[in-house]
Amino acid sequence: MPNIRIPTPLRAFTSNESQVQVGGATVGEALSNLTVRYPELRQHLYDGETLRSFVNVYLGDEDVRFLDGLETNLEESDSLRIIPSIAGGAG
Image 1 (cartoon, rainbow, N blue to C red):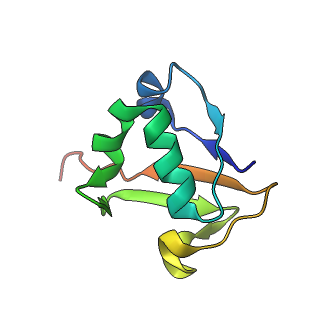
Image 2: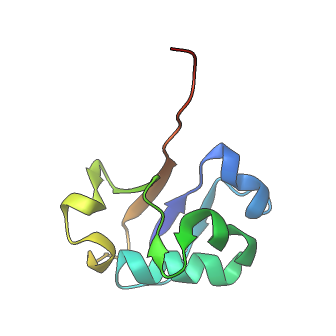
Image 3: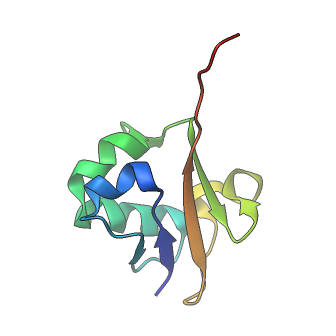
């Protein structure tokens, strides 16, 4: 099953799991299955049915937005990383 690495700020919603194995033939299916397992996580990843613009998902070293987005196919041994964008600081 594909593996999803969970960033530290979101681990509070995955029982402090840093990695979660989920089923799914595509990135979208894997993320959907992740949020079914951990429903509180959904609001942090999605705006309605759309992945939030500040949530970046990587397949290996590739941002899935530059592949086929949520329709990117996954292999059993693939690893996804969720990387939320961080903004702020003093100007």
